[in-house]
Image (cartoon, rainbow, N blue to C red; front, side, top):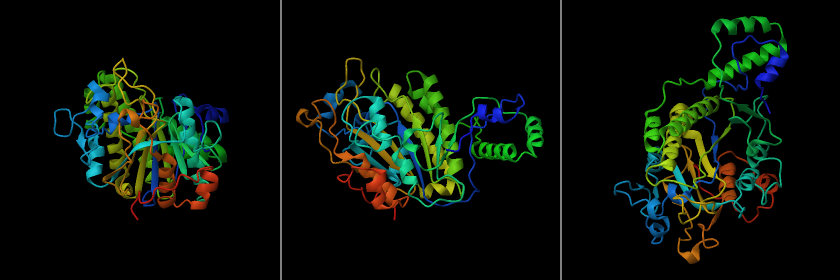
Length: 415
């Protein structure tokens, strides 16, 4: 894994006190139009019934009570999809993608995990195994290991403080961590460059770090207008704006890497704050503010990718769903069936994929949760085979062992 922490750089030689951090990697040159994949892990168990409300289901409103979203067109109502499902009103960009046939909504989905532990659920989601802690590597890394190597450049990059399990494994991947330190003065950088000019190791490390920082650079003052909307939609606007600023920085960095012709094919980052046990909110409130921030971040990703958006698929998944009924603290507890999203210019969208089980008491899983009817591994396999070209045999044997019953979901991306 190509990652260099600041302490590692300092151990190679004295670095002037400019606050320079080198947890960066660099990839290639601009102009690429190859197929790209972004995977976003929504940690905390996203409430799929809130984000994609089945407002036409006769049991929905009674289960959801004060959290129920009205039909499209009503005040605070859901955004329209297909006449049965809608989107949370905070997801305006995603609804635009649906209208442009660049979004597929997947509902009543789940991994093979049927308990309610975040830790174990995320492990199964990321490892691709049938049970928790069955593998020390992730399905996405194992998939990248099946693709042809490309010189010394990594095929994937993880953005965030840690490389998630889904990206750990035999394939070499890079990582990028947002710096929390002030940018060094130009004169300081020039002096350091001169100091290390004749050292083959230090000069290469410094050049790589500077190039990657240039790729991922973003103007913090140029936040999208949607960040303000995200903050105003939340009960407390400060956390919502913090989420929005983080998403803007991460998605700009992801786009910077993926735009490179010889750069990574895949970028991964995670989002948090989806564990809504109390005061979840309906059309507005805690969940709505965080959804608006995420929606704005995805809009930033499309804008920053430019022409590369046409060749990109973005997959958003969570470890499990939440209870069908509202709890006593105006929130929802850990559940089973969830919602997932696939968007991008490469996506054959404008549809909802759901074998809907219904929300009647007899249809709920264990009398409390949305029953899952689609295995997420079917979605993963379909994207990996048709979009990235991972061989079908490798998907069955090494990427997703013990998954013969989970057949690839075809036609998710444009041919």
